[in-house]
Length: 117
Image (cartoon, rainbow, N blue to C red; front, side, top):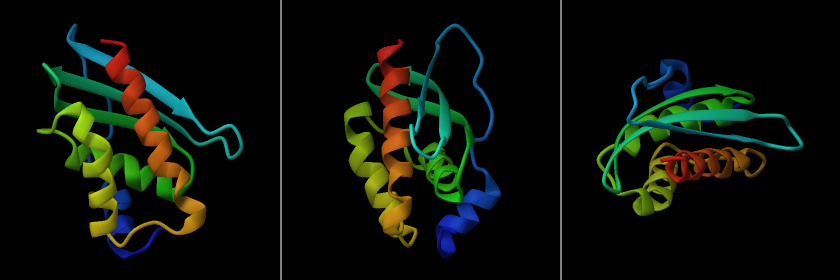
């Protein structure tokens, strides 16, 4: 189970859902071993993330990190997102070793969405 502040983010499910419109790009990623799955809807202006919504299935860490991304990444350039997400995770009590796959899963879905523009 995710720790303290990440657990709160997971339970709040910030940004859950889909974005609609012609300007929305989508990406997904799945973990081949545990089966966790993340889908991201992304709206961008230039290289900046404007809005991010998500759907996810899997462990609490995957749900928490995906929700955290929806709150932390809008307003930032796509190439800044890995560092922004890493800092947000650290600021929310971090992930246990067995939960770290969640961050990679979210970043792969984000990259796939950006590439589908």
